[in-house]
Amino acid sequence: MSWSTPWLGDDRRSLAIGLNVEPPNSRRADLRSNRVSFATTRFLGDYRRLRRGFTYFGRLEILQRDGTAPGGAVQQLTPSVGAGYFRDSRNVRIDPIRGSFLSFSSEYATGWTTDEIAYVRALGDVRKFVSIGSRLVLAGRGVMVLTGGKVPN
Image 1: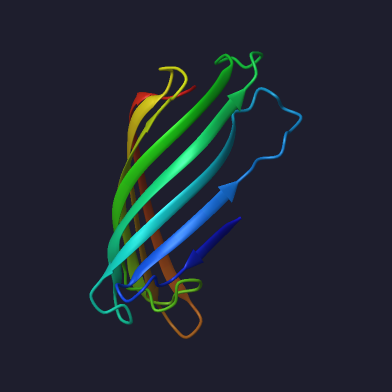
Image 2: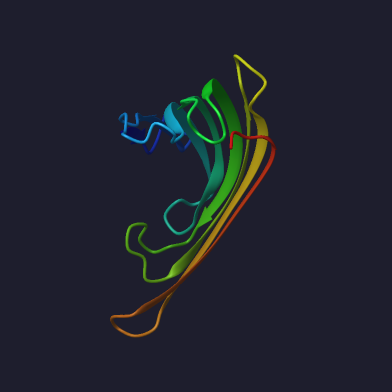
């Protein structure tokens, strides 16, 4: 579940608030994540032709796994903060036929109750869309995730 508003005031800022609750499942060895998050974006330049800006975000996450898992039990409250930059020239966000999307961000997370979790993560996402005829679109995507530090198995 999430909610967002495209503009806050006259400064072309957005606000997004999210809640993700995973239902209990039959595989108790799985790592479950329940979280609440927020993000705010400051848009740069003309928003109609090229959407670009800086995003700042935070998340409070509860990670849980029982002791029967090979990696052991996890019961951790983990806050994280981060920032990123994006550039979006797609003609339509949902079903584009031309343009590109570029996003880079980094986040820092640490455990509040123990020192089992403390990591830095860098994320990159690049997408390109090219129309090759009246009904065909060639799409490409590259994703990069680099994580260093203490991350649960």
